[in-house]
Image (cartoon, rainbow, N blue to C red; front, side, top):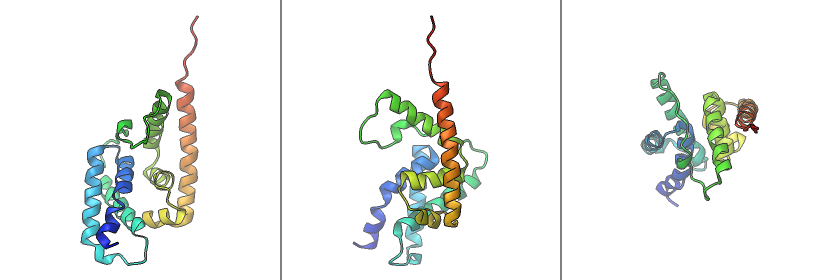
Length: 168
């Protein structure tokens, strides 16, 4: 496999992660394009034998952070459930759960959301996530723990507020 093929194989996960980070299809596509452009221009800096996937995700993370800093005043938008690539269309209850999860993810800090997405969505190891984010493994574990607890609280609150009462 040559270098271009190596990058191409990582485009679908990059798109998925970008959609989860940005919550907007157009912004996600722009983020992927910016990431691939930066990776291609700096490909000589990548060392053979190291983790290409983690290197690409680290570039995406840095591009995303730079974009967020550049547009501090913008408000985050929730992920449209139609943009999430699911193998089967979920029943209505699952769609509502997905909507609630997307809203809950949007309320987390960027640091917690990134760790949860890298480990939960992209199935990265703690070491890979630490490499992508440029933080120690202990920080990844701490952010993941706090983020999961915050998600649990938010999802429990969402499930209790959406229950209907029987009216006589």
